[in-house]
Image (tube, rainbow, N blue to C red; front, side, top):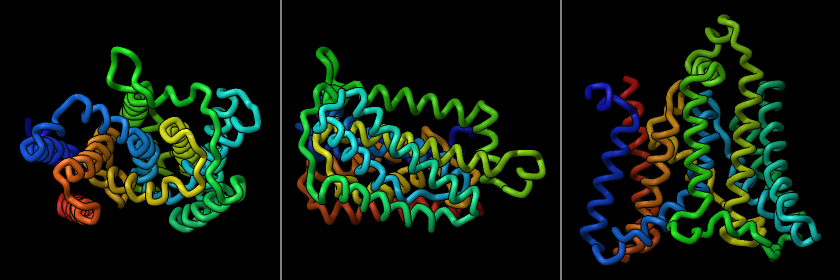
Length: 310
């Protein structure tokens, strides 16, 4: 029990349960229903998938500001391929491949040239957004999804779409890799103390490259599900997504100093942010109140992280 109480994700879990109870009392007719739970699960998918890669990056001691632009570029690539007559699976593969390559670009610049992650990803954030706008002529691309919308459409007999199950499977996979594999231990070691990890034989540059490439792949998956939801390629989509993803990971107990974090905590953080937005909407609070509450929670999570580390 003492180990559970000390877990970084335990506090956010309590907050998630407590807020759910509050919103259920304030909006008993709509908030606790299965339909709303399914809606919240679908709305959490994009951020949740983004947190998987961001958790690894933050544990590594890095940051990625380009995820929102990568997701937007992925939707544009998918829509462009579909409109040109490509098969749905070829379009989906292209939408996954492009962000993977951009993630590898981030990793190569950070690991190879030793440029700070903030600078690299700030640059690629603008670069990818510009490429997305150029490919789409600064317009939304309407294209028949030809079945790709099924990823985020609930199947008969289930109130959860396949995308939610894919996100849960990916979370379980990345959680196991982080905790039990050699690669996961290398990520934690580099984030905890890079010099010590290097002396112990950890290939630091290679670990950084792989982490950013994996994060790019996950951004591509998030882009596929975003297109499945909107069925449009939008170069302006997902603006600010990187802040939501980083906030979810930090709320879930990850340390911005590196060396600490968990997939479970990141998922709880993503659910908590969705719960706040949905609950505020159900009780009629305006959007600016939601933003204030989200900001307070982010500041509180970082303050708690500092207190815990001391």
